[in-house]
Length: 136
Image (tube, rainbow, N blue to C red; front, side, top):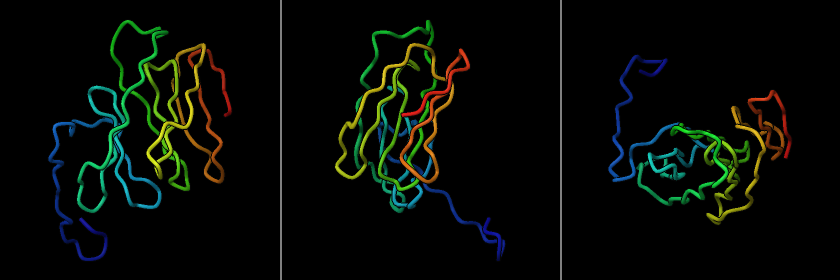
């Protein structure tokens, strides 16, 4: 419901075979909805139509330290230029949204437990199980 008139805003359903998304969020500019599907691929949807625009494939890390499947973490930079997604919680894939390309792969020695961009820059912050904080 909206805060002014109490009217229902409505519900839209994703119509895609890759629609089973987890860790869903809007980009700060409101243009896209991003999420991680069951194959751990990062999916970009148009925010107004929910049309699937692009899928970044999962670049699985062979260094996985986890014996069970986990939800991957996802974060978007404040300027909506980058999205970062964990891979097996032992690497971070950084994609450029503008040209839909892989920008960087960051391999980490420990299991990643948190992931976020600085609100005023493109600095990426990672937290690990061993209470390490890493800046990229």
